[in-house]
Amino acid sequence: MAGFGFKFGPLHSTLPFLLLGIGVDDAFIITSAFHHTYDADAYPMESSIPLHERVALAMSHAGMSITLTSITDALAFGIGASTTIPALSSFCAYASFGILWCYLLQVFFFTACLVVDQWRAQRQIYDFLCCIKASKPHLLGDIQDGQVVDRYCYFCTCKPDLLARFLGGPYANILTKTPVKVGVLAVAAALLGASIYGATNLEERFDLAFFVPDDSYGSKYFDYLDDYYSGAPVPMTVVVKDFDYYANRDTTLPDVSSILRTSKYVEASTVESIFEEYARSPLYDTSTPAAWYTGLSTFITQDGPGKRFEQDIVWRDPLDVTQGIRASRLRAGYRGSAIPDSPSQVDAMLTLRKELADVDGVDVFHYSFEHLTWEASAVIVYELILNLSLAFTAVFLVTLFLIGHPLTSIRTLSSCVSSTVLSSLSVSFMYYWGVPINTVSVIYIVLGLGLSVDYSAHIGYSFMLQQAATRDERVVKALGEIGASVLNGAFSTFLAILVLAFSKSYVFRVFFIQFFDIAVFGVAAGICILPVLLSWLGSAPYTIPQDAPVKDGKVVETLEDTHEPSAVTVPTIRQKSAEENHEREGEESTPPGSV
Image (cartoon, rainbow, N blue to C red):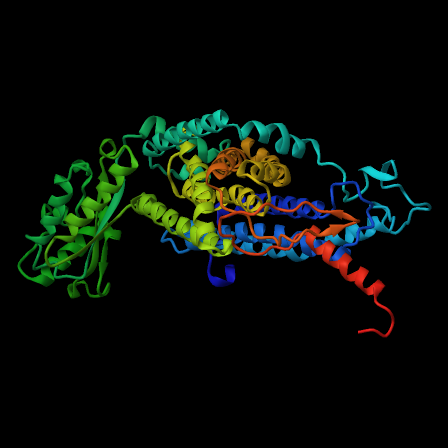
């Protein structure tokens, strides 16, 4: 990205943790989908489905899910790269590019590694000593009544783990009860209210001390500055450029000084004008322009009260000062007590800028080192709202496009969007953490919108794949199938960023706070709020042919008809296996030479 002109700054050091979290989440989804391609009804591992087709079936489900989340994340950050705030623009560009590469690695590299490892296990090759093959075949599990009932070697058809059984059993059954649904939505409404309250009370504040380690010498300097000199004037410089100084010595130049002295934001005693000092000097001569410029040159070059202004004058020709002045500067200071917070600082900067711009016949420019942060504060709220609006719209449109059916999309999105709003509004809890709005936290707010949709998208997409008579049953199946992967991904992400909680860097601590909120509220929205909404508003599942497939002489469960329009036809493992079995049976029964 540096080749495209994007700078790498202190904020970018959190990107590895971001990409690690996203990558682990996707890996859990792919692994879970691959695991589910093995029937859970205790059939032998030598299934009729070849390994390469098995991974294709897994990716037909997991691939869609991680594609949806990766595109929405990358697009949300891509839109953030268009902001006028350089730090946010650069971070979002790097993040968007990194997420796309992470997605490609998951699809092409991690999936390939998964297949290779499964190939190794099926051939009885040890995992750690991959060059050594077992001397005798290892049993794949316990056998009862001629069937394998519990597998404990590589991917297997064993019963789901404890977490999956809990989510798809007691938890889901309790969650789908009407009183519990009402209680969940009531808690969600309370959290939303607390989030909105926090959002309306967030303050804007940025300090250069944020980028200094807590135990550094520089941090002590900023602490002493705040403790003892917080009300001291903030130095600024006012530059007056190209105009006739001699002709305007009694009009324009005094006007500039007057604006500074009468401003409520400027400490009048700090205003220093070279021309006012010169006017009180015995060297002051207004008889001719040449005499005036020569006297000024002498005043600032000889020892005396004017010597300190020597660097404030830029001559057109230093060898011939009678040619006039190219630029000059005045010194002043903002009144510290008048600018205690970001809004007042921004107002002071913009007000003084406008007043000086209104001076006729001269180009006046005022600047302070503090303007670096004040300029960002002036646009940060607008940029935040704009980027969130654009990113949210983009996420909505991408989700709508990938789901593929207008009515199904609207109904499903109404649920996903509701839970996503609740999870993305978790950033408003910065108020309770004491984190203000600044260029650091804004980056992670945009990050929150991009990532908060992930948890809901996985659950929502799994819900659309489930076949059952009622929405409640589909919710139970979805939680049992994908809920554990979502929780595992969130927990592993939390472990990855936990070390940042003890960092001495403000940037890393804010990253932990924001990511912690995203994980907690995002998962809560995905496995608590969204299932409740889907149980009431969820659309019909993706269509699967109703002809009952046959497997091992048994009729696989068929699906009840629904009266709602469906989106697309998604091949399932059972369907594909049954079709291949029928084809093989047909081939075996066909006499040689027949067509």
